[in-house]
Image (cartoon, rainbow, N blue to C red; front, side):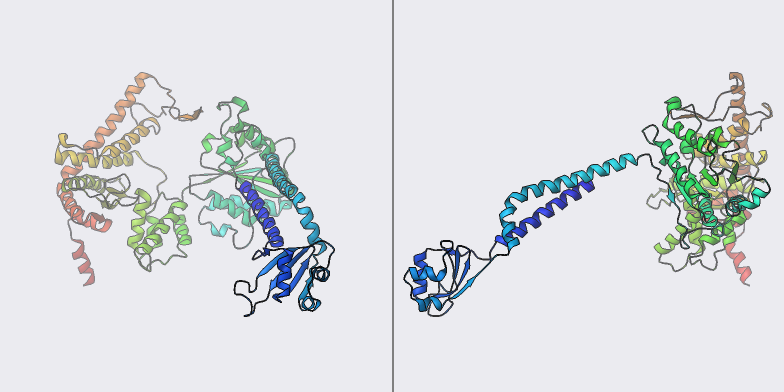
Length: 627
């Protein structure tokens, strides 16, 4: 549409230029007055004519501009028609004008250039044909453009990565992910020095599958491979293959691999391959589904009758469980590189990379920040420091302080503060008891993570929050830890019940009850942590994908077993509630002190919280240190 408007705009401009040209040929600043020969003779006889310009059969007379002439006639221009072929002198003599008066006039003959004469005579006939020709030209261009698009519909939109020094990434730019980098460095070595491996009879791997949670750096690693390999690197998203027309995706796959063959050795990177690589046979169109045709073509190109020598396919996904088995077999994606969430050492390296261009205050410790961010991905850590920098700009600070970093952690985890929502005194007190219940139970249970922060300021969907994080990364969780976590989740519900009674319970604990129920269900059905049911998994968790519906739990147990499962879940939740009641009853004084402090300052950090639980004053301790 935009190109069409541009074409019509050019046509209009061309017409305007033609009109201006004709106007310049024929237009005059002031139109001369048409008079007869008698008037001309009178002006000549009275010696009022200054000059005469002869153009074909037209006489252009210019009247003198002197005081002896009437003011209305001074400088006036007149136009007189005469017979063709008759000179001005001959005409005047025939009309009885004295020769002396004729020769006193400045007579000039104007001859038109040949090109102008021809153009003026031909233009009236040529002009319509010119308009039609211009219109047809632009219409033809539009049709050709549409044909080119139609012919290129099946062409691949893969782009070749830039390898210039400014934009390229290397493995040095990727913090952490040591095992993944080691695997990919080997792939780069295959491309750079293939003779080393061929001498040992080793074959170049056909495909590498990068698997990991969102934000762990799969695409960044692929960019690093492009920078390290120094070979053509084609990248495309899985969704770019699929169109509503059957066969387009397969055509684009063929075109992509043809490009890679011409540039071999080369690397092809397919991001989010699960867009086309999902299990076959579950689509609405059966085997004729467009996505399945595209997947079939990828399988053939990777390991068919015409092997792609020197081409390595790297794919990335965060849903390896839904990929077709044919993609994962040896000969296609030979290597599967798992990129897990970074541990504390990797988080420290990632934070150091993203903190390079940010003016952190002296009290901000990258190591402490890494300890307080377990479970954060690389993208989360980048976002954390970015939010802290934005907060520093908003507060007109020249450095990013520790307070800003802590607030950014809360924002990334829970969302922004709800400063506009003002709670009344009763709701504020109820929120304080609720969060104190969580915090006190979590503090006095041995297997709960340390409480880092307690606040009654709403964030995201929460009216308040209790933030607890482990001291070090955990790779396995024990039954006792799950039970203590459930008791901590029940702490808010139990605190409200103890203070306000059953009749005044609110909807506040609904989220906590949901999390506790889900945890109890996993303990019983997935983790084998039920004595009565024993070491067995209940419910087939393999995803069934049919008509865009995902059914997560396929029932593989009887109704009688379902009753036992319900009973075991209820028992875990009841025991968690009893444990929370025991802790809050025993530590009622600590709870009241924490509630009082929360109502006073709204947010309590870890150091102050520990001091309240131990019954000491944080200010007095700091004074002793100063002494």
